[in-house]
Structures are given as structure tokens and as C-alpha cells.
Image (tube, rainbow, N blue to C red):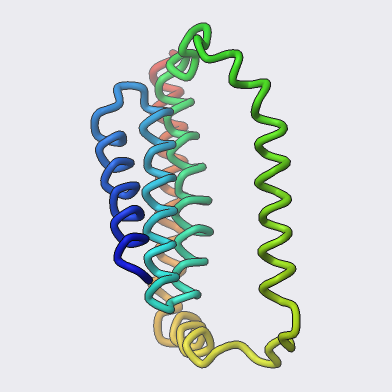
Length: 164
């Protein structure tokens, strides 16, 4: 990766981290966290760790952020409503800009896969991580899922106590 791309990506990462810390609205802060986790995934891609990049997006930017937003909505009712949006006119631009981004994504995928045969097996790194995860580290993996479930139950109990 070039130095210019690295500096731009690092700027996005630092800016989103500052937005996360400085925003008072917890929903906006959570969205800045998603951007930061996405830039970390791109850093993983530049290092050649495709599995870690996908895991970063799927586990942290996906599942953990859903859990955070669920906790915010349950523990701070009404906080998600920020009032009328002064940038309402920009919503009209969302559909055409989204269509352009989708077209770019299709073009990148089409040119990236053209002339290349699909891989017959997974890379050795992914197989090694999967083998370790589901053999040697199976117990910690399952304990983590139980801890996340316990955290969700705790949030529900705290919310129920606040209401009653």
C-alpha cells in the first residue's frame, strides 16, 4: 500500500476515533465506532490477512455493534430521537449516490474476478485458524458466546428495573 493511501486511511481511523470519543449522542458515537472498525479491517487487508479482515467486519462491525445499539436503545429510551434533521435535503441524494456506489462495486468485482479461476481450497492461513478455533480453542470460543448472552440478559434486567 502506498504511503498516501496509508496516511489517508490513518486519518480516517484517527478522525473516527476522535468522533467516537467526542460525540455526546451515543448513536452517533456507535456509528463512528463502526467506521473505525471498518478502517481496521482495511488495514488487515493491506497486511494480507483476509480472514482477519472479514472476521473484523462480521464480528465487530456487525454483531458487536448490533449488541451495542440494542443496549443503547434499551437503556436510554428516547435518546435515539435527535429531533428534526437540518440536513433533510441531503436525503434526496442518498438514492442516486447509493446507486453509483453499487455500480462501482459491481464494476470492481467484475474486473477483479475476470480471467481468474476460483480457488479450489481455502488458503492455508484460514484452514489453520479454523482448525485451531474449533479444536484447541473451542472452549474459550463457546465461553465467549455465553458471556455475550449473559450481557444481553443483564441489559434486559437493568432495563426492566428502570421501568418498574
